[in-house]
Length: 63
Ligand SMILES: [Zn+2]
Image (tube, rainbow, N blue to C red):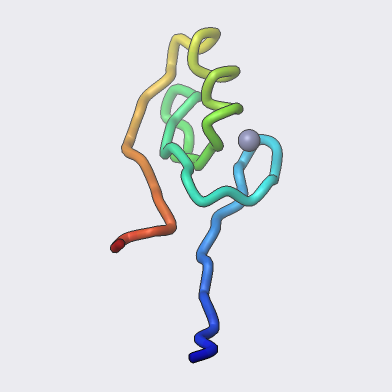
């Protein structure tokens, strides 16, 4: 059966690349929550005193 696979992805707020796993983070004091890919997370996390982690977003919600 040819089933159309719907892949839901989100673009990373930093590099604009679409990814199926993104991290919801806040990197500015009182800033907006943004979604970043794992690669960008590694860049924004260590250097940021306002870093807050808000959860992981995955496109695959079921197996
Ligand atoms: Zn990114």
